[in-house]
Length: 111
Image (cartoon, rainbow, N blue to C red; front, side):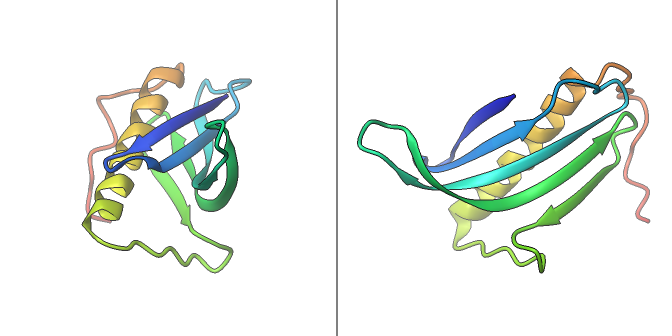
């Protein structure tokens, strides 16, 4: 499944969220690409790896940001807002798609 998520600054700031719906009874894995180029037809021409995420039934999540070294460049307030919006959307997808998702657990324990 692919989902296009527009950024707070408009279509130029956008992410392509990819996930597999085959076995998501207990967890879901995401690959997210930042869209860095558009064709004049409105189709995506270029992307860069943005993050990988793994969210479980209990709301716990694991994240790998940016490139292979974990580097992620966020430039300005709108990029931070886009990043926060993306993370919120990944959790919404997880809550709606994971069959056994339990909203009653997963509170931040500080560890």
